[in-house]
Length: 380
Ligand SMILES: Cc1ncc(COP(=O)(O)O)c(C=O)c1O
Image 1 (cartoon, rainbow, N blue to C red):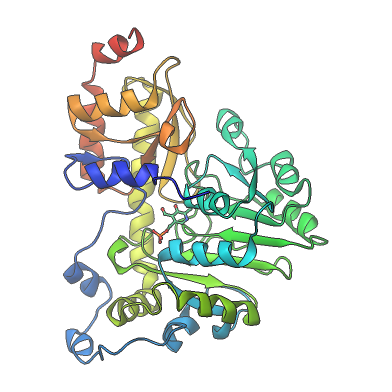
Image 2 (image 1 turned 90 degrees about the vertical axis):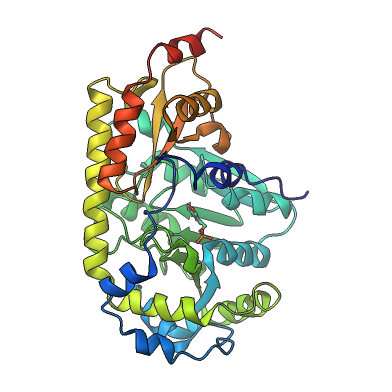
């Protein structure tokens, strides 16, 4: 089975650059290079001295050292620097999965997390998180976690903070995971792409190391507004990472030394920028929640605030088709959001909270001007 088109990317590619208000993006608003250098207090002469030779295949050592410090008990030779988390996932799935292997994951999901396994012939076991959005309870919940481990899957994919719901692992979830992984013989992959933006202090929790066969993927790109740097990573047992490196040699082989250099500086000096970004995110989430509670956003009936990451799912009025609604919102008031149909689920839209506060507020204001058109859409 081949890879189908990447639904969200098709829409994002079409609208992200021209949307007057982009409330659908899955990353923080991108920085310019001079803004980044200012935040990092970077000396341009240092950048000027950078060699443009190929980087080491595993990634430069000081960057791998810096990444390894984000985890407990991880050494630099357990780190493979990749072109985005996308490449890290692609490699992991190709190394771990074969035709017929059961693969368990939360649903809805970022498409690469199930599309690549499906293309390799894996059978999917989906654990539906949407009822969690309707409940007041936090976290993934005991039943969902038990379901994830049911039938002893060959691979469990645990994405947290979760895209698109914004759910993070709460203390009870972590204890449950500890119990469930203690005798788990197969593989568990923690996709921790949004780990830098969690309600927890500093860094969000990582599940890496809970059991022997655990791996983790991570990135700086979306959390810090540096998507174009395309730096991600894969963490795993040392000998497994060697195999992953060898597979990467068939793909992008090495990453750009300029991206690696900037990623290194960013990780070394991330905290002030990270705090500032978290403040903006919280403000945008709060503003969206207030506007929903006050009934100011036509089409939206409820919204559970995300506890981590940049995105969240808001529930649409019954009877609205998410694609038609997203198209209408864009055509009438210039506000871009992603329809849940692009996550192969109906009844929601996915929001991104990474815009500047000013633009986000403007987006909400424009949205509130949408009127009878929504009702007309219901009657179509
Ligand atoms: C959960 C999750 N994993 C992986 C990726 C892919 O990351 P990258 O853009 O670094 O390849 C994304 C991107 O949005 C994501 O949301």
